[in-house]
Picture (cartoon, one colour):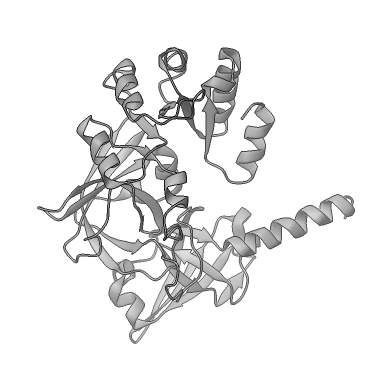
Length: 343
């Protein structure tokens, strides 16, 4: 990001976080760009490579996330001790995200041994033989229970059980969909069968995760692997917002739901299209644009393995728009506005 327009354009494309690289920006630019991002309700990750850049980053508002890139920009060599060295400059109250060179469980363990539990992994994923572990299919494995929800400044920590073993082989840094929201594993306690996730404030605002309490059941799905059958539709865990159950009808063992969708999102829903609700891939069986409602029907198996068994009228659900539909609608709208501006 080098210009406020880039931030505004990114927000228009549904981005919720920007990266500011201190090495590429002046202090004035860092202040201006972070202010614009906060104005548009976006998170800011400020990336540093050395002590001098960390000093500059610490002049920015504390709500900025601090990322330490372990790569030397002059030699391109990677040294994981860079994060360890710069961590103390930030103080105990600032959370550090380590970047570059994190490609094995041993690297993760090294960071955790030094009190660092947040990771940004890019190249390491791309070099893996199963690089497709990056999305979901909306076929929920089952439910687990919330153990605790701890509220911190800028984020919450969600702890869920692993009593059913869905997360037995999970690793720190892995992606897991909880009620449809893509979250990163930050801590694993196999002895007590618990897994922790950090949930940023932006995610809390968009989803129902901040409403969870101990004992609540949440839908769990592991990330999709290349070569696996996709029995649902492509979901990314990027929740659009909260939809409300307007009406609920039980037909024997099946369940019919009328879902109230925010008015500005109704353009993305069509009869027999797809929607992700609390992480479940569902078919849209009816669309009422006047009332801003969509209808879905759940079979007994879906009800049995998900937390839909206990929903009621008025409950809020995380919803995700089908990205293919969004792309088509937005492209057609942009083309029409460009070629027929007066229509």
